[in-house]
Image 1 (cartoon, rainbow, N blue to C red):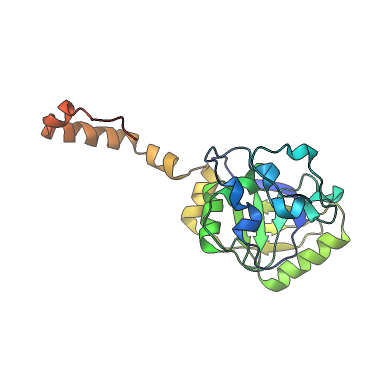
Image 2 (cartoon, rainbow, N blue to C red):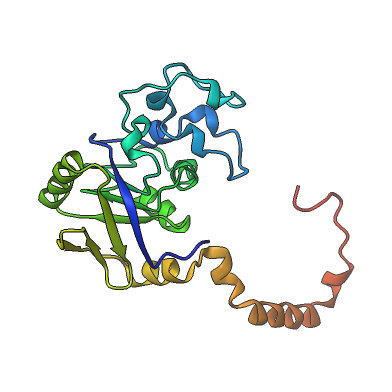
Length: 221
């Protein structure tokens, strides 16, 4: 997982409450577990004027010019500004995959669904929840300021703008450490590889018959 320490990024405002994971990554794109190629289908039913299906040439599809991510001023955005209850609905990890592969590293919202938030952290996306008044002020500033960017400092837990305004945010220490060092569950486990290998050797020595097992079918299935 890519480390997150300090970044400055263009802000795109998604001015909607209760954006669920089916809107973020529609169900028809969940057939793949490859964890790649989901960026073009992020917010698919809102970005395009036709109905998207896996395997379509997205470059040839008609875009909805009214949708925020299709507007020229927000191209290349890496900070997504949202309202209440972002990421509600099903717990599909495809939603954070799509957000990350589109280019978003930070989501700032009033509130986010808990499982969605945890899935974001595990994919290198920093989710920041701020008070409604602060989020509302950011929406107003984004609307009035083309090219508006925010700097996010995870180490110091601060979001700041070019005018000098700064907003502190909370994050669990363990989550913060994982993001700062680019650690997911697999890499955390691999940090104990020596102890795992030593246990396996001790276990095999005590139960030597395990070495003679022959599986009747390939494992995993």
